[in-house]
Image (cartoon, rainbow, N blue to C red; front, side, top):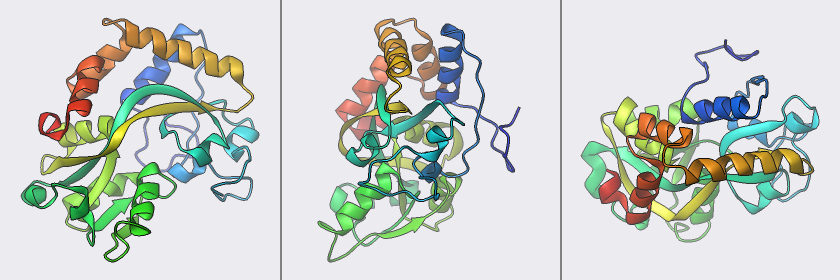
Length: 250
């Protein structure tokens, strides 16, 4: 059943959806899905504005429409002022380009002056904006703020030179959905991607933390089954791959 308010092909599926279904099953919870059309909607205040640096409770939580945000949320200081972020699994920012352009993008400096497709209020946008204000100041990246669906499509259709994805999404995309795209290089260190809840909801946060701790410790866990299903790696092997570098990940 598509979430209420969904107007396009937004049937929930994928690794994160499988995991939240399992989390609900293990904890005997009834899962109610909430449709959020844009990523920024996870962080908007009651005026539907994202204000980085301020402390407030996002409207989606404050309204009690949603208790848990089981998305891949990178831990950033401004987000920690809004939500309680619970580490779920490891990842890394990866640059995705077209196969015929792979030799052009070998180092971070090669991105300067190119055109990127990304979503607003993401860690990818934050990184690009930071680079444009510093290392790329003389030759900034041209940033197109697009929907999640258009990030990869725009690169594939030559409407953008590159996009940035978290490792799990990047590996799935180039293996399953976009055969003309490849992962080119990694940005920064290993990240811990998080689920999120209200800052005061310690009980729910502890429950999520316990779930992932147990999943990571058991080689036969549901987490490992999901990772093998979507990414062709066990969770441990996936962490090794993104730690070692991109030649293995490609």
